[in-house]
Image (cartoon, rainbow, N blue to C red):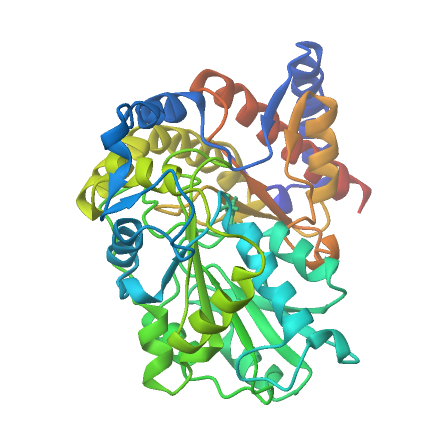
Length: 425
Ligand SMILES: Cc1ncc(COP(=O)(O)O)c(C=O)c1O
């Protein structure tokens, strides 16, 4: 098999005719497939629905001497805080258990900075002329959505194999208008990269010009290996504390991809100062979160070992799906030299970088053939991928048979988009 970029004009024309035929055949099947979002598949949800059966009799609701059915314990059930403290390698006193979505807590943490300022700042950000925000990209579209909804000026920071480009970050944080940064440090969305120890050290030791700089450490995939063993990961709060930066960081996690997305529990981890600050503000907002759900999670998951055991079961379902995607790319795309991708061991995505200028066209061809993909461009601030190259593949939702069909459409669409471009040039 020859690389497309090494083909002669005549060879490209022949290949275009052939691939157009393949594409039209696929389109004629009238399929309706979806690889757009990182949702767990039905088998994963079925596997955890036993969580609904763990609380039956009146006495089941008692935990730590607390009746989980009643008001109280704003910061969460002690057993639930302890469970997450164990998972994230922090102290329970630094863990706050919230509602069913970490994204909502991230939004709320930033909203509070706008309305009430930060524990170490000079007042509400809403009074500032401008808030600039560092956005490692490709990144998570919903992070960028939060930044955009507050009118922040988003600044793209390139990703590297080590995490994000810290040379760039260290320059940018000298601007006092740069007030924060998104990070998905383990199995980053979408690249699936684990930040290296050196990257984490450089992040933790940052000296931003803005003294109330907010590091949003979204550890959404902290226990989400689908190939291989659990990879231990440093505690960012302790790392920051080593450099006197403990008030800079909020870490987030949730059980969205452990139990039920949208019906699990979420947490933030922060310094003692930030915890006191947040509790005071949250106390005006809610009396207490859903401790019944917290208790269900404690009883069902039990402890760190229980969580890791369950994650192995998720991996048994997810691993073959990721293998299907990666095998297809390796077989169909790699020899033609029209894209490259990471081979992640965890997270929920495969991040594909096509040759420049064909991601949108590939997306459109997929759509017309019945396959919905994450919008091309969505992984960049303002949906603006300067190279029109990055595409996020989410293999978790479709059953494996459908995934095979989806990958066939995806690979043929990418080949067609590449050939159409190369033939024009
Ligand atoms: C990096 C990242 N953070 C957060 C979320 C959403 O988490 P939650 O359901 O807890 O809001 C996702 C979901 O895809 C994600 O990829």
